[in-house]
Length: 219
Length: 99
Image 1 (cartoon, rainbow over the protein chains, first blue to last red):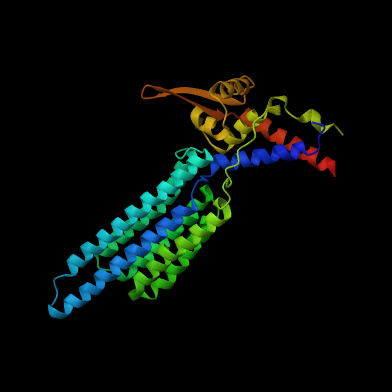
Image 2 (spheres, each protein chain N blue to C red):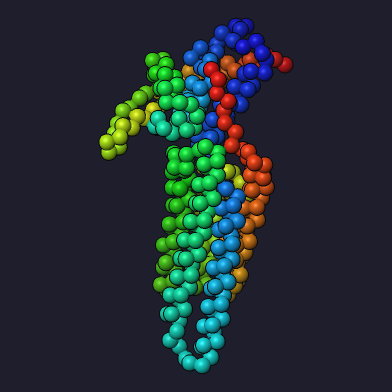
């Protein structure tokens, strides 16, 4: 203990260990990019479906709105499923590379803290669809998703917070532009995810060893 | 003034034990496998360090089962928290004394 740098190094180790054990740090930038691409594809499909609906409405009166609603919910569900699977896949790859368990206490905390605002938002959106408040669906998605991200950012990389702020701001702007849900949806879930994913990849994964540093263990 | 080196806790000389304490102070209860992955040591190595910490009264061990598999979980005791904190304080003092 006569080396003066050692206590500093020890404190550094402790800090790193605390970070490692309390935050889920394997979230890959590729997950963000993949989710964003899925969202873009989903938004495109929804947009096409709405155009088709508007065209077919010119010939006949009424009727097909229930069908449109069903299809849009289906598209949203498929988009979410694809984004979720791909995002999990890239995160799984990264956690393997870093040698961190994917399902530890940190991951559980992250899941619970993002799931809670999402679930609350889900109920609100469900009811909005029931009462035909369609103009509020996209802003609610964005706002609750943003809140979930800000809440979850305490348990994963802190940068997620900025993505959350972006989603909340878009959602709020969307409140006063109710007819442009798909545009804001595309911007929030597509473009923002891709920008975020790319930034994270640039910051942490560009170099092959990333931040998967481990405590050098010697005793 | 007392030499701060004397205030360093001998139990925390090992970096592995320091790592275990850092992980446990952030988590209420952690099981053996999670700790092993976090600290990246072998089973035997981790077990012997856990034993030392348990004997010092810094951690509390609970043996349970998930189905048929044993599930040993660890939690930091209040004595452990106190010891870890004063060790950190001693380290801080050492760093301050450098300038």
